[in-house]
Length: 280
Length: 54
Image 1 (tube, each protein chain N blue to C red):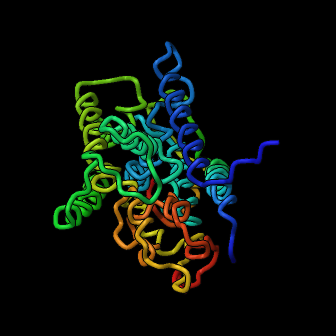
Image 2: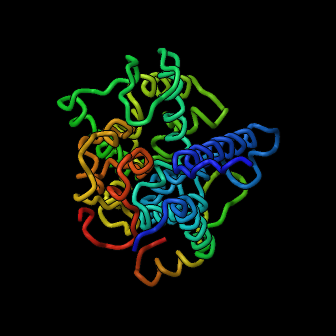
């Protein structure tokens, strides 16, 4: 008789990420089928960020931007719902781009000679890099400027401002333009160079969701009596957060729960629902 | 309240589905054509109540 394999969040997350990637590709594929584009809205209308791009024009004029429609608001509402409950968990679990970046980082490590990833052990491969804090920290603010710029320019645009450079369209849209090819190359090269490059530095949706990490009730709690600051969780953090146990509601955290899965000391990190302090 | 990590994915997916359905109930439904536009009845009512021109 075989014993069942122990449950790990990492495996569930990877399965969900694959489902999201395949599902998004199916939506993209459907929109390049002859006659299908006219049924049920454009590819852009399935995007949560499309809802942010079109919300100001909708409030001021009563109309959404072209290529978006009311479905964007439902998808945005669903994304905000996840954020209200679990912070940036959408980025870590349900975002197609986040999934692709995780896959690319894993494949890059394999390409550069890592045979098998051992949890909690620093990878010896050259790529993906971890940028020094002096460079990394200022760059992280870029996404907030991207968000602000998009919100302002959306008032003067006919199509969503990010549309021509949108990595979701570049990766999943299957209707390529020169600008989208450039975006795709930059996105993939960036993801090989720096893990979750898009999420860390440029994603305006991540910028919009960051604040929810401070207020969402589903959160990790660290127990000082158990944690010995071994640093295994820091190594596994794809967002490169330093000192993870003391930064559990950090705005950059995508709630992937790799830290919880990696933690070797039972009881150091626990998942809780409620508004207690996240350190006990 | 402690929760088993096993339930975390279900919590995320449930939150997504519930709020997506709320969006649909508010009238934010997919439209044919892909060229955007449209006004949800509930949104128009909210805007007119608040005095926001639509």
